[in-house]
Image (tube, rainbow, N blue to C red):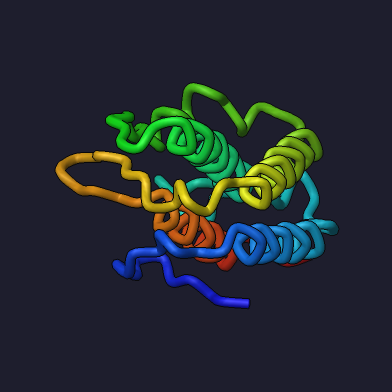
Length: 162
């Protein structure tokens, strides 16, 4: 099973949907174990001023999964897409993850990522070369999915352990 790096510029247009889905499911299981004993009180603590709490960080990962699921679906339906990025700080602030129940945030993240893994596994690999035009860059769908895995891995390392 390949491990993708967060900033690897390699074109992943030939990525295997089943391998990507398997990797995401592995990360979901890892996160589920890692966060199982984390209390709401622990999750709400900010590690430093201006830094997100674990709860807000997981909220950010919900936003990331939601945006990337949209990209996955839309880029299977069109060869080239101009689609906005998202303002991560504003999304986390606007959705007020810090005011939600910690268990609900974890449940939402788990369910959304399980759906994402399912859709990745069912994806047409021939669309992985389709391109998202974003801020002057041409990012293939395969790369977007591989980058998501790296992004997720990066943030899971920032999460508390039970």
